[in-house]
Image 1 (cartoon, helix red, strand yellow):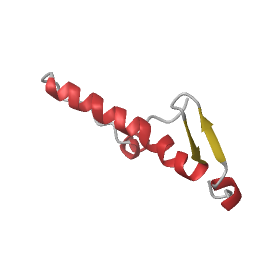
Image 2 (cartoon, one colour):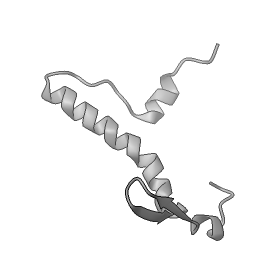
Image 3 (cartoon, one colour):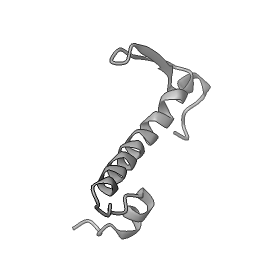
Image 4 (cartoon, helix red, strand yellow):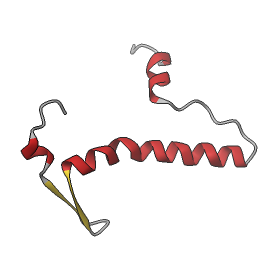
Length: 69
């Protein structure tokens, strides 16, 4: 992302599966936040079913993940 310039950020992406278009700048937050929303949905559903959802914060995963073999 550090190499993106205004021309790259303003590039328009066709999104036929939702019948829309978005700039690269508009699409980048979607890329980051989409899976976060699904993790929240899963946690809420697990709680509703009486479960205790595991920690799913990325930064905690990075801290706790095992080193590659």
